[in-house]
Amino acid sequence: MLIYDRQSYLQGNEFRLLFSDSDSKGFLHSHEFLEMCYVVSGTGLHVVNGIKRNLVAGSIIIIDYGASHIVLDKSKDFYSINILFLPEYIDNSLLNCKSFRD
Image 1: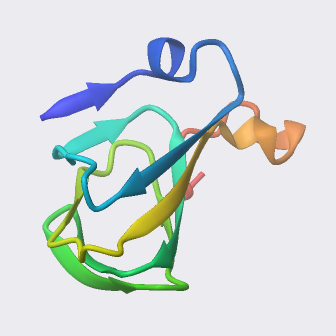
Image 2: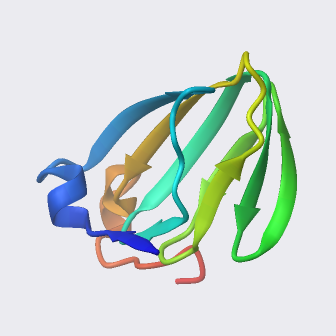
């Protein structure tokens, strides 16, 4: 499983914006930052720590530090916007936060 670290993947920024469509290849991975995914169109299957959830247009997912996840079975019209971010991007009081549980 891939583990994305905050330094190399966020490239020194507090957030990074990514776009995914049906052709984007997903890999089971986790990371040292938070991720929010908004499904613009289509459907898919999101697997987080082994738990499967259906995705539809309008779905919003927030993925915690260290959660292994992947999107499978994307429909041809699947399109999502993913925001990778550090908690302090939301508020400075979250500077040392490493999980939604903190």
